[in-house]
Image (cartoon, rainbow, N blue to C red; front, side, top):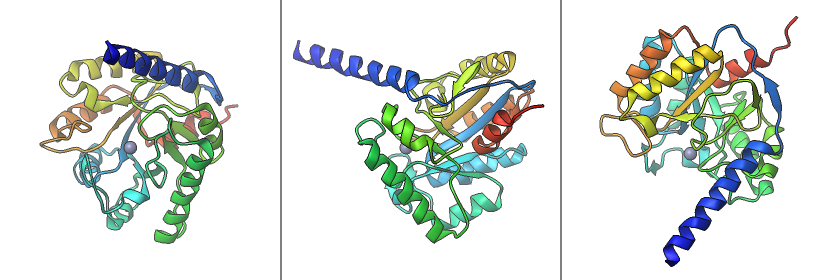
Length: 259
Ligand SMILES: [Zn+2]
């Protein structure tokens, strides 16, 4: 019984967090494009996201966005070995997009907004020391939907901020640059048809679909997917008629003033 009550409150708290992340401290913009857009992003990020995932994207002439917590560099995480400095250099050389995931991989709900912002700044400073001149232009919130105050503070530093996997949707109509929806591929890795149906819906709605995952490996962690599944999705996305753009470039193009 106690466990049931605890589960109930956990689920209420989760729903409230999702709703406040969705409704408050928004930076609205209307998606108005003739051709749908799809972005591929990787969180944390494990080496395999670049070595396997990036190679697949490259085969199709596409580029991805890698959300790095520099505090995780060289460490071992749940999705496998994390990126090394040489991977950061390689991804920029290959034309991929580097995004911020906070220095300390801060929990977006449990971390007070001021501490979250400090970790955003710390990540930028660390990047400037490792790769002078490089900067993060977009952010992905780690672990959970953000607090409204975190959205407000993070939003000041970036072109746009991407939400976590709980949203599992594409962006259309009036979207929120402080918390864009994303679709985490690992949650449907046993159901490629569902992912393809989502790609089709995004094309019809002329929306912006942002995929996310972690490792790309033949024996993936619960947070990743296999190269075969990933390539199947990339192949379908490329042939869907949508434009495949890294998050920062998509954001710049979609928010550019027209006329
Ligand atoms: Zn993460």
